[in-house]
Length: 215
Image 1 (cartoon, rainbow, N blue to C red):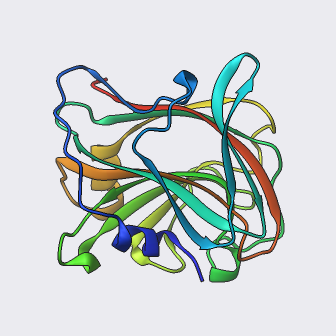
Image 2: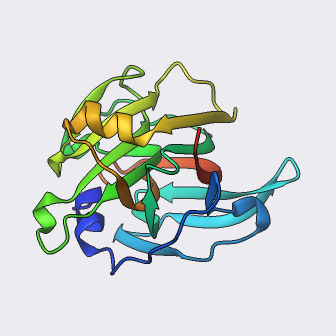
Protein backbone atom coordinates (compact mmCIF):
# COMPACT_ATOMS: atom_id res chain seq x y z
CA UNK A 1 0.00 0.00 0.00
CA UNK A 2 1.25 3.44 -0.81
CA UNK A 3 0.02 6.93 -0.64
CA UNK A 4 1.11 10.43 0.11
CA UNK A 5 0.02 9.78 3.70
CA UNK A 6 3.08 7.63 4.38
CA UNK A 7 5.28 10.33 2.92
CA UNK A 8 3.58 13.01 4.97
CA UNK A 9 4.32 11.37 8.31
CA UNK A 10 7.87 10.19 7.55
CA UNK A 11 9.40 13.42 6.30
CA UNK A 12 12.53 14.27 8.29
CA UNK A 13 13.01 17.40 10.49
CA UNK A 14 12.58 20.62 8.60
CA UNK A 15 15.20 22.75 6.90
CA UNK A 16 14.26 26.39 7.35
CA UNK A 17 15.03 28.96 4.66
CA UNK A 18 14.74 32.70 4.89
CA UNK A 19 12.88 34.34 2.06
CA UNK A 20 14.55 37.50 0.87
CA UNK A 21 13.57 37.57 -2.79
CA UNK A 22 10.27 37.53 -4.62
CA UNK A 23 11.22 34.23 -6.30
CA UNK A 24 12.27 31.20 -4.31
CA UNK A 25 13.65 28.26 -6.28
CA UNK A 26 12.63 24.79 -5.08
CA UNK A 27 13.44 22.56 -8.06
CA UNK A 28 16.24 23.91 -10.24
CA UNK A 29 16.14 21.06 -12.70
CA UNK A 30 17.11 23.28 -15.64
CA UNK A 31 20.39 23.94 -13.81
CA UNK A 32 20.99 20.18 -13.57
CA UNK A 33 20.50 20.35 -9.82
CA UNK A 34 18.70 18.04 -7.38
CA UNK A 35 20.20 19.35 -4.15
CA UNK A 36 17.84 18.92 -1.21
CA UNK A 37 15.54 16.48 -2.99
CA UNK A 38 15.09 13.08 -1.39
CA UNK A 39 13.53 9.85 -2.57
CA UNK A 40 10.70 7.94 -0.90
CA UNK A 41 9.59 4.51 -2.12
CA UNK A 42 6.17 2.97 -1.45
CA UNK A 43 6.18 0.02 -3.84
CA UNK A 44 8.87 -0.50 -6.44
CA UNK A 45 10.80 2.40 -7.91
CA UNK A 46 9.66 5.09 -10.29
CA UNK A 47 12.80 6.11 -12.18
CA UNK A 48 13.55 9.83 -11.85
CA UNK A 49 16.32 11.32 -13.99
CA UNK A 50 17.58 14.72 -15.05
CA UNK A 51 17.39 14.72 -18.84
CA UNK A 52 17.43 17.25 -21.65
CA UNK A 53 14.21 17.72 -23.61
CA UNK A 54 14.29 20.24 -26.45
CA UNK A 55 17.53 21.62 -25.09
CA UNK A 56 16.29 22.17 -21.51
CA UNK A 57 17.11 19.90 -18.58
CA UNK A 58 14.01 18.62 -16.77
CA UNK A 59 13.21 15.88 -14.30
CA UNK A 60 11.71 12.87 -16.08
CA UNK A 61 9.76 10.08 -14.42
CA UNK A 62 9.10 6.56 -15.68
CA UNK A 63 6.87 4.26 -13.65
CA UNK A 64 6.03 0.60 -14.31
CA UNK A 65 3.62 -0.77 -11.68
CA UNK A 66 5.60 1.21 -9.12
CA UNK A 67 5.10 4.09 -6.74
CA UNK A 68 7.88 6.30 -5.41
CA UNK A 69 8.23 10.03 -5.07
CA UNK A 70 10.71 12.85 -4.68
CA UNK A 71 10.31 15.42 -1.93
CA UNK A 72 12.09 18.50 -0.67
CA UNK A 73 11.64 19.81 2.83
CA UNK A 74 11.75 23.56 3.05
CA UNK A 75 9.84 25.98 5.22
CA UNK A 76 8.14 28.39 2.82
CA UNK A 77 6.74 31.66 4.15
CA UNK A 78 3.52 32.06 2.18
CA UNK A 79 3.11 35.61 3.38
CA UNK A 80 6.17 36.41 1.28
CA UNK A 81 5.80 33.97 -1.62
CA UNK A 82 2.30 32.44 -1.75
CA UNK A 83 2.35 31.27 -5.39
CA UNK A 84 3.68 27.88 -6.45
CA UNK A 85 4.86 27.72 -10.07
CA UNK A 86 5.88 24.76 -12.22
CA UNK A 87 5.53 23.16 -15.61
CA UNK A 88 4.84 19.54 -16.48
CA UNK A 89 3.81 17.18 -19.23
CA UNK A 90 2.80 13.52 -19.52
CA UNK A 91 3.47 10.91 -22.18
CA UNK A 92 0.35 8.80 -21.64
CA UNK A 93 -2.89 8.65 -19.68
CA UNK A 94 -3.88 6.07 -17.10
CA UNK A 95 -7.36 5.06 -18.24
CA UNK A 96 -10.01 2.88 -16.67
CA UNK A 97 -9.21 3.82 -13.07
CA UNK A 98 -11.53 5.08 -10.37
CA UNK A 99 -9.17 7.74 -9.07
CA UNK A 100 -11.22 8.25 -5.94
CA UNK A 101 -10.63 4.65 -4.83
CA UNK A 102 -7.53 3.02 -3.33
CA UNK A 103 -7.26 0.71 -6.32
CA UNK A 104 -7.23 3.68 -8.69
CA UNK A 105 -5.04 6.12 -6.75
CA UNK A 106 -2.44 6.37 -9.56
CA UNK A 107 -1.44 9.44 -11.57
CA UNK A 108 1.06 10.05 -14.35
CA UNK A 109 2.02 13.28 -12.59
CA UNK A 110 1.32 14.98 -9.30
CA UNK A 111 2.81 17.89 -7.40
CA UNK A 112 1.87 18.44 -3.79
CA UNK A 113 2.52 20.69 -0.85
CA UNK A 114 2.62 19.61 2.78
CA UNK A 115 1.87 21.35 6.07
CA UNK A 116 3.25 19.26 8.91
CA UNK A 117 1.43 18.70 12.17
CA UNK A 118 4.60 18.35 14.22
CA UNK A 119 4.32 15.68 16.90
CA UNK A 120 0.60 15.59 16.15
CA UNK A 121 1.29 13.91 12.80
CA UNK A 122 -2.42 13.28 12.34
CA UNK A 123 -2.79 17.01 11.80
CA UNK A 124 -0.46 16.93 8.80
CA UNK A 125 -2.27 18.10 5.67
CA UNK A 126 -1.49 18.20 1.97
CA UNK A 127 -2.89 19.39 -1.33
CA UNK A 128 -2.25 17.08 -4.29
CA UNK A 129 -2.34 18.79 -7.67
CA UNK A 130 -2.80 15.89 -10.06
CA UNK A 131 -2.88 15.23 -13.78
CA UNK A 132 -5.98 13.05 -13.83
CA UNK A 133 -6.77 10.45 -16.46
CA UNK A 134 -10.46 9.89 -15.72
CA UNK A 135 -11.54 12.86 -13.63
CA UNK A 136 -12.76 16.19 -14.96
CA UNK A 137 -10.49 19.20 -14.61
CA UNK A 138 -11.02 21.25 -11.38
CA UNK A 139 -12.63 18.32 -9.54
CA UNK A 140 -11.74 18.08 -5.83
CA UNK A 141 -11.92 14.98 -3.65
CA UNK A 142 -10.27 13.51 -0.50
CA UNK A 143 -7.40 11.10 -1.03
CA UNK A 144 -8.53 7.47 -0.86
CA UNK A 145 -5.82 6.55 1.66
CA UNK A 146 -5.45 9.73 3.73
CA UNK A 147 -9.05 10.92 3.74
CA UNK A 148 -9.55 14.62 4.31
CA UNK A 149 -5.93 15.07 5.43
CA UNK A 150 -4.92 15.12 1.76
CA UNK A 151 -7.17 16.80 -0.79
CA UNK A 152 -6.85 16.03 -4.49
CA UNK A 153 -7.31 18.71 -7.13
CA UNK A 154 -7.33 17.75 -10.80
CA UNK A 155 -5.45 20.59 -12.50
CA UNK A 156 -5.40 18.67 -15.77
CA UNK A 157 -7.84 16.04 -16.92
CA UNK A 158 -8.34 13.64 -19.82
CA UNK A 159 -8.86 16.57 -22.21
CA UNK A 160 -5.24 17.76 -21.83
CA UNK A 161 -2.87 17.01 -24.70
CA UNK A 162 -0.06 14.50 -24.36
CA UNK A 163 3.61 15.54 -24.64
CA UNK A 164 2.68 19.22 -24.39
CA UNK A 165 4.10 21.38 -21.62
CA UNK A 166 1.57 22.99 -19.31
CA UNK A 167 2.51 25.87 -17.00
CA UNK A 168 0.83 26.08 -13.60
CA UNK A 169 0.54 28.79 -10.95
CA UNK A 170 -1.37 28.21 -7.72
CA UNK A 171 -2.00 30.48 -4.75
CA UNK A 172 -1.29 27.98 -1.98
CA UNK A 173 -2.80 30.08 0.79
CA UNK A 174 -6.03 30.52 -1.17
CA UNK A 175 -6.18 26.82 -2.04
CA UNK A 176 -5.72 25.74 1.59
CA UNK A 177 -8.46 28.15 2.62
CA UNK A 178 -10.80 26.76 -0.02
CA UNK A 179 -10.04 23.07 0.49
CA UNK A 180 -9.45 22.93 4.26
CA UNK A 181 -11.08 26.10 5.52
CA UNK A 182 -7.81 27.09 7.17
CA UNK A 183 -5.65 30.20 6.99
CA UNK A 184 -2.04 29.05 6.81
CA UNK A 185 1.10 31.15 6.69
CA UNK A 186 3.65 28.52 5.65
CA UNK A 187 4.15 25.08 4.16
CA UNK A 188 6.89 22.62 5.06
CA UNK A 189 7.59 20.50 1.98
CA UNK A 190 6.99 20.08 -1.74
CA UNK A 191 6.82 16.68 -3.44
CA UNK A 192 6.30 15.16 -6.87
CA UNK A 193 5.24 11.67 -7.80
CA UNK A 194 4.50 9.60 -10.87
CA UNK A 195 2.89 6.40 -9.63
CA UNK A 196 1.27 3.31 -11.12
CA UNK A 197 1.53 0.79 -8.28
CA UNK A 198 -2.16 0.34 -7.47
CA UNK A 199 -3.43 -0.22 -11.00
CA UNK A 200 -0.26 -1.91 -12.28
CA UNK A 201 0.06 0.37 -15.29
CA UNK A 202 2.85 2.41 -16.87
CA UNK A 203 3.28 6.17 -17.01
CA UNK A 204 5.89 8.66 -18.17
CA UNK A 205 6.06 12.33 -17.25
CA UNK A 206 8.43 15.28 -17.08
CA UNK A 207 8.64 18.12 -14.57
CA UNK A 208 10.14 21.53 -15.21
CA UNK A 209 11.51 23.96 -12.65
CA UNK A 210 9.50 24.54 -9.46
CA UNK A 211 9.52 27.82 -7.57
CA UNK A 212 7.52 30.06 -5.27
CA UNK A 213 6.82 33.69 -6.11
CA UNK A 214 5.31 36.80 -4.59
CA UNK A 215 2.81 37.20 -7.44
